[in-house]
Amino acid sequence: MIPATTPANHIWIYDTTLRDGAQMEGLSLSIDDKLRIARQLDRLGIPFIEGGWPGANPKDVQFFWRLQEEPLTQAEVVAFCATRRPGRTAADDPMLQPILAAGTRWVTTFGKSWDLHVVEGLKTSLDENLSMIQDTIEFFRQHNRRVIYDAEHWFDGYKQNPDYALKTLEAAIAGGAEWLVLCDTNGGTLPHEVTAIVQQVVEAIGLKQPTNQGEGDRLAVPQLGIHTHNDAGTAVANALTAVVEGARMVQGTINGYGERCGNANLCSLIPNLQLKLGYNCVRADQLAQLTDSSRLISEVVNLAPDDHAPFVGQSAFAHKGGIHVSAVERNPLTYEHLQPELVGNRRRIVISEQAGLSNVLAKARSFGINLDKQDPSSRQILQRLKTLENQGYQFEAAEASFELLMREALGQRQSFFEVKGFQVHCDMATQTEMWESHSLATIKVAVEGQDVLEAAEGNGPVSALDAALRKALMNFYPVIATFQLSDYKVRILDGTAGAAAKTRVLVESSNGHQRWTTVGVSENIIEASYQALVEGLEYGLMLQNQAKTALTSSHVAQD
Image 1 (tube, one colour):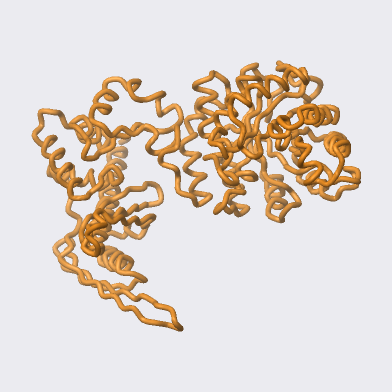
Image 2 (cartoon, rainbow, N blue to C red):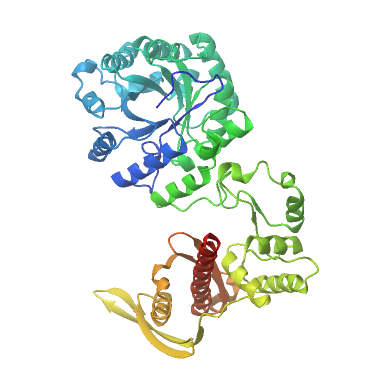
């Protein structure tokens, strides 16, 4: 739980992925999804996790109940709500009762900072809004809750009417709020504005950085926090600027999820704060879990990871140009701003037609293959690579295919099966004025000296071909049942050629623990798909053999 004393350079990270992040278009979370994310954030060392608005929907109510039964190990789960409604007291507002029932020690309540919202949104007076803020916070304090006050639309409100905006913070302080979080709700404020306004707030309110929590659990002096949105593309920069000027709580979401353009991305904020600015956010071993946390949560919310995301993206430490690779091999500082391992990521050497011999040698090492510049195979692999990429192959996105290519050149590619031929037949028929596709694939495969002929149906030619191939191999390699086709991408390479254009197919496969991508290129989309599917299965079987060999070696070593 939250310690009684903290160093002056400590930054409290407040995650709102489960509430603010869930407002992102296309993102939907079940109760189990929310619990899984909360437990991952707990392991990551996030001290405050906003769970949602109890009472706003049944899902959030059940989420807080489940956490009461199985609490997190160290994080504080926070319930979120608005201030009481106009014209009544907090004690008489039924909206606040589910917040108490959630059983959290901390409550975040938001109120209006912008007079425009008070008059046109709440349809009440400026004085009544101040009473709503103070009364709501006092109500929670009377029920032994610690309160974080989110000043909604703070920066827009301050720019329009600074005197009134400051009065809303004073009302929150009078009510007993321990944190005053300045929210850039519309996301349009720029860093230089954040700098000036936070400086003015610190001076006007007289906030100081405490060295302890004050009497009992309470902070001795209310502290500033920052909550930024990314509509102007400056959410991370704005949050960092606020911290430099005195904010000690930073709110954001994993991967920057959120409504419209998203929230400040904690996957960028945490390493920038800790590794660049010298603040303390999480332990070093927890920071090393950041990349895995980012990718796990992207899987839970069913959104593809951003490969080019700073710090945690698959391409964040990828090197493609031969000169870059050669320099990084000698000293990573030449083209990397920090060690990828600090955030749980890794360096990747990307293979493409721009690759030099350094790329090939570095990539070989990542596959456990030792090559040197004098080995003729190195230049043969490089030449083969450039020839194939000139034909339309793309190995930077299909490293599994490149490893198979490399092992074939070195005589290390194991032959698991041989496809002797296949046919795919497609029917299109109308059903109640709708076209339906039926595909049948027949394939002949040689495995362990036997010819196997199988057929399978699918809702399309690629699906049928994949099913037939798996059916033919399953008796020989049962592990194939665990292989999943997790992504399928098609790109037309020369659109001016019309129907005769070359097609590149990328197939991503998974065994539940690892993912790998293979590529096929042909003027026939089924042929291109066949190439990628066959190599996907072959690579998965190679991984299975490598795992068995490693396990056997481990047992021998123990004996």
